[in-house]
Image (tube, rainbow, N blue to C red; front, side, top):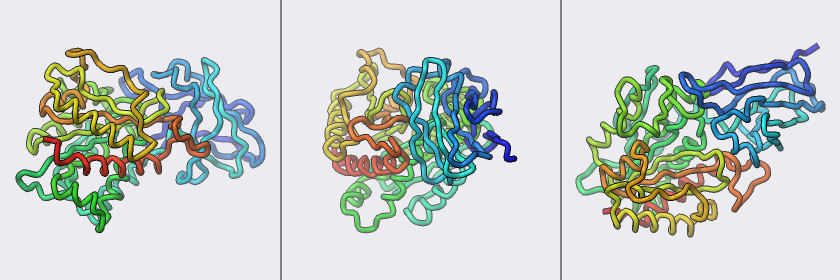
Length: 379
């Protein structure tokens, strides 16, 4: 007789087993980040399934998670091969997230979102250099010694605009590195006049993954020290948050003319941006560029909109420890946080995948088109 087993002892795995004795009620819990109370990310494998028999899963501590209102309207993702992911209808009862699968295979993976593995990250860094013409410009180290890679597409010639894109400061937001893969994919194009126009005027500085320690350990928000990297851009230290410390050093070395920080949002089922309107040194030029970016991207893709997002900060009331606010204030440039949904885009829903890695990649390509249209007015 095959015994049902639940495991998460792998890259970005996160689950604790409460009771897996009955396929009719498999009770689980999400594990908090190291040295932090945050939790919401899950990623586990169920093995020994009975094909054709319903299996019911409950994440019993969903009601105590970091963004417990986000479970309403959310559907878990699943895959039999860790490559093709699909949504599983889910419900939140105020305490637990519940979903049922009648499997067609004896094992299945479940996750909060389509995971981006460290193995794929390593492939992406190599692919970016060999096929997309990027240069490995510098390497920082995480708390646990993993590489933070800074790539540059361009030659650093005087007068060229410096466009920075970083991703996955929050390690559970795997759509962010799927976005970066989309950037790299488009950089491979040889006969793309829109892209070439951008690259004639600007160099791209890319950090595909800011928080590999957190991702490896299955964290939602923090690095291996329990630090939220997107809340320490004014007071980061080389010991507590070396990931941010490294990137800030590189920005000061090379300069910044535009900054995009790529994230995922648990609650809001839309793609949107947050900007610098609350900064003490906010300029009319920044306001104009923010409006232009939003307007142009909205025209290019229905996957971006401006109706829904975070409340605008009042003048002088911005949280300056956020990356986009900090960089925008220091370099007086267009500086944005780009948010993608964990759920779906309600403007363009996909009942099979919801928001996905594939859609994140396409959004990245559309963002590059937007930047090409804007590059001449960034300064």
